[in-house]
Length: 134
Image 1 (tube, helix red, strand yellow):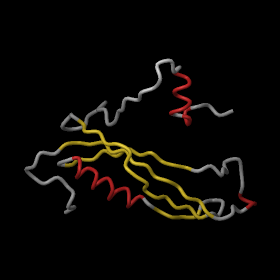
Image 2 (cartoon, one colour):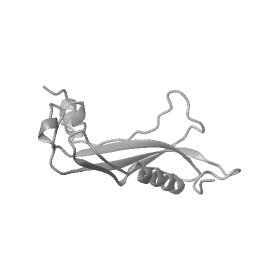
Image 3 (cartoon, helix red, strand yellow):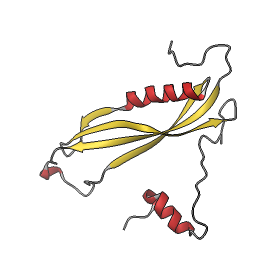
């Protein structure tokens, strides 16, 4: 039995825990493998896990255990060494529904911006990955 599983008879809830992972790529790429998909940009992954736990502290413990199991190393198609590492927790959200169902919100946050901020500017700054690439 996993020590962080909710104990039978104890009240448990659902949590969404947001985590950040970082990708480290080292070594020179094999020049013969470079294609249009190759980039030297740094990559981060933001993940949100749905976790059943007795407390927020236990949800974090379970999330960290899962995050550490996600850390991995491999060689990419360009023959470079790739390593994914857990960086930190970004946020956690207690779900008020006892059991998740269709259309259950698993994460939300309110983001403040200057009053005169235009929506397009906000999206470009906060969510650049949603911008169309030429």
